[in-house]
Length: 330
Image (cartoon, rainbow, N blue to C red):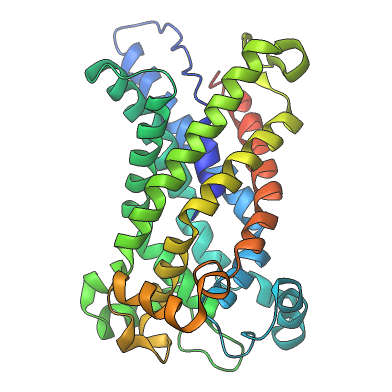
């Protein structure tokens, strides 16, 4: 879930609040800052996810062993989907993803800043550890708020042309609600998602934040540059952002990937023939391991996530840095 969104919040230089005039000035300025933060994170997340949407579709198909593509690898599936479903087939489910990723990125970014401040001031925890804790909490908060949208996105992405169970986003919401236990049906697989998100987001924040602070401390001229909206704030150069984000995403993804596979299978629910054998997280992981092993089961499609990591982080960081400067967040 969401490497790009995690990366957005990792740029953790708290912006200085400019002075405001008038009695209502501070409140208005503070509210406007949160709105700008919301927009910056949401826009960057959407751009990053759209860039790697074809890879996301292939990942869902491979993770859940769709019978049309289960014997194919990553690149073979990328070629086979356009042949069977047209090039737009690579973007199936992306509409639901955009509806989800905008609030997801925004919530995670704002929650990270809030939790980081809370942990530092209330618990007295500072240094790199507070990034690990705040990142994990922010990731879980964003997941809980947007999980139903991810559920619908996965169901739409798993469909193959000519075998549609859902005609669109609204129909998917109505069908899941009616046939899979009402509101709780939208939260199938939430537990492995949270268990996977905690280390994923936490390690992403920790790794990127550490690399960023060390880099800017030891080689500010080589690795950094002044922000265009505030010359007093030093930011990483774009290609350095890409490198740091890629390393952070790769490490975090490796740790949390088995939970991601488990989550996808639980989200697909009745769509899969082995549905009754995968009702709980433990049953699902046991089934995947027993039938497919570690490399072809719990870590199936991991190479695709590594391939997604670099372009996703590149777009996320580049767009977010532009948005931060555009909205004067530095």
